[in-house]
Each structure stands twice: as structure tokens, then as C-alpha cells.
Length: 517
Image 1 (cartoon, rainbow, N blue to C red):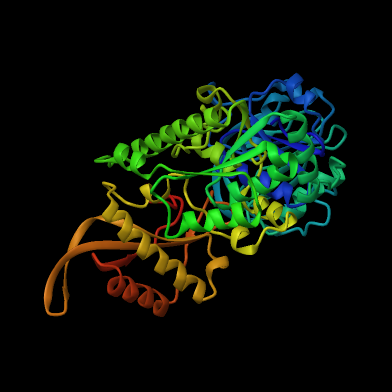
Image 2 (tube, rainbow, N blue to C red):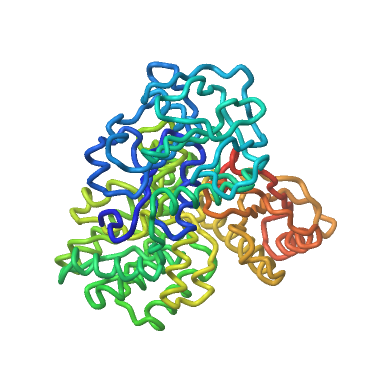
């Protein structure tokens, strides 16, 4: 499916900032659609998208160097308001004739913003408000037509404006929580400067998407890989609303699922929702191909390849299938490839991103590829899915394969399933399940000495991983009560044969990732 077209849009040009996705989220919180685009998109292509406003993101480069990323200077001739953030402000200044130099005193962290003149962008903002800085360059001379509207102790030009043209720049980051009135600044840009309308709601998204899917798919058949996770479950109900009998959901048991997963999915979607659901037990095939594999990227690629084969076979049996549905999300796209030409790097591959339509000779339908996880949950609520599906914690496409460090065997899968079930059970009993982004167990590739019933043991180690996050892009480890950790540990060691030690993961993302592989 193409980008969302029915709503006012703010275009965000990505220069590689770690906060680019956060800008997009902040804009959407005001019910205005935002889209992240390559920093070097042509001005004519940008105009075709008809955005209400343009935001130039920050980035790690310096505009003083020749190979630094730049945008098409033609965007400043489109008559569209522009907000430059940090690197974006410096780039706008340089392209419009200003001067940027290395800062005399670099600013990283908190600063106090002193407002120097009345303007739309900083309207209602208190002088002396706290902002978050992260820069080593500074604008020394503003372009013609601009005026200084704010400064800080170390930045004599911390914010600029050409109000006649609707061009604004801020040296700080309004999108981060550390900037006390950052959301108000973005709100001013959206509504006072861009005159955007708040039409981006999940109700309107559903209506627009259902119509778009019906138009694109028509009377043809579409298959969807249903895993039972939030994304595929919500997508299944949405596509069912649009396509009815022309939708077939295929649930593949790859042998890497959590305890009782297959039974739950079949009961929910085949019996309760009465969807066309095809169940394929491919456990033996997956485990055979994963035998002896320890490299996490190889695991992911093998699992992705087998999914393609399973779908190809299923599609042939159904006959005449022309479309493949996928629950790809925005973070999936960001983490699976370098960020739209910016200097971001690939973190890991996702089995549901890229390449499948060509290999399977089907057209891809990805209604959620511009949504964040919390937005998908809101779609689920609008569609009246039960809470145990909507608020189910994320589960990786490769399943337990990336939570077993090292070789994958039936015995090791069984150990992790039982331990993982205990972790989830106790988290739910403690009333913390919906407050935590993810909670799960990891089976480590080591064994340790223990004592059980006066006998020496040499058995496996389970790591408990619990994190809090808004969208999975960043995450912090959860400070579970010591009593709860002790209870989970005791149950795992006493109830799961083959485990004699439990440890707790206290690392955050970044620098770690949420999953261990």
C-alpha cells in the first residue's frame, strides 16, 4: 500500500539523528500525520506529497564538511513552512547564505533558553525554560531576512526565524522530554505556523485503510501470516473487515513458539472470529534447518527463508493468490536498513521486511508500515479486539530461536518454554504485565554447578529480561521488586527440569538491544 494520503502531513527529512523517529511520534501525538523521508528527496517529489510543513531533523555530521548530508535547496522555494532542528537549523542557515562555525563552547545537555523577541514558534514559552542541547557547531551569521529569537549562555543564536517565509530554526531538541516545553514548541509550529488540522486518528486510519485495501485487492485473494502477536492479530481483524472471504490467514507452527501458543491462536481466530485459517505444523522442517546453527543472523535468515517456502506452498494450494499481507511497522523498517540515506546503521534484519513479494510473486500489502506499536494497539481498541491480544507483549518473528543463545534443540526449547511461562505468569499475577514492554526468559549457552537434594548438578542458566519502552526504539530495564525476582527464580529452579541458576538482565537499549540476539 502507498503512504497515507487522506490527512494533513508533516514531512520529516532524516539526517541521521537518533531522535528522528521521536520527532515523528511527537507530531502524531497532536493527531497530525508525519512521514520520515530521505534527506535528499527532490523538492518536486516533496511538493507532490503536499505537506503542510517540513522538519529538518538533527544529525551527527557537521555542515562544515563537504561530504555532510544536505537537502535540495529548492525546498525553501516551495512556500511551505520549515523547522530546522539542531543540524537542520545549521543546514538551513548555510544553504540560505548564513555562516556556521565550530562552537567556541560546545553544548551537551541542559541549557536555559532566553527568549529575545515575540514570535509564533516560541509563543507562550517562558524565558529561561529548560532545553536539551547536543551540538558542536553554531550559527555565527544568520541568513538575510532572519532574526535571532532566543539564546542560551553558550549559544548567542539558539533560535532563529524568518517569519515572512515561515522558516524557523532551533539549536536544541524540542522532541525530547528533557526540553521542558518542547511539545508546546512543536504544537506552535504545527498549528500556528503550518495551520495543520488534527485529522490523524485511528478511527480515520481504519476507514481510510479499509477503503484502500478494498480498492487495491479488489476481488483477488490475500494471504496473511498470522503469528498471534499484536501486529498480525490486529492486521488480521482489519483485513477481515475489508476482505472477508478473500482473506486467508496462515498460521505456521515453526516449533519456536511459546507454551500453548498454537492452541490459543487457533481457538481465537478460527473458532471465535471464524476466519479462514490454515494451520501448518512445520516444526520438523524448521528444527532440521536450524540444527547446529548458532549465529543469530543465520538463524533469522533460515527462519525467514522457511517462512517463504511455507507460504509459497500454501499459496499454491489455495490457488490464484495475488497479495501478501504483512504487519511491518515503522521501527521494523528503520532497524532493518540504513535510515533513508542517512548515517544510521542496520541493527538487525527482520524476517518480515523486504524481498518477499519478488520471491513469492505476490504484491505486498503493509497497512501498518507507517505506524508505531502503540498506534497499532489503538487500532486494535477501535476494532474491539480483546485486551489480552491488544496488550500482548511483543514477541520476535524468529520466536524462541533468538532467545536461545547457541544451538537450538527440542530439549532446550522445552526448557525455555517452561521458564518463560513462569516469568509471564508471575508478572501477570503481580499486576505488572501491561506496565512492562517485554518480559521473557533467555536460555544461556552455559551450564553451572549447583546442589539439589544433596546432589551436585551441572545444568542450565536462565536470564530474566524485563524492559520498559514506548515503541521499542529505546528501552530501560525494569526495577522489579526483589521479592518478585526471587519468586520467579525459585519457581523456575524448582519446576523446570534442567535449570539450576537464574540471573537478571540490567542493561538498557542503547547500548544493548531488547532481545539478546
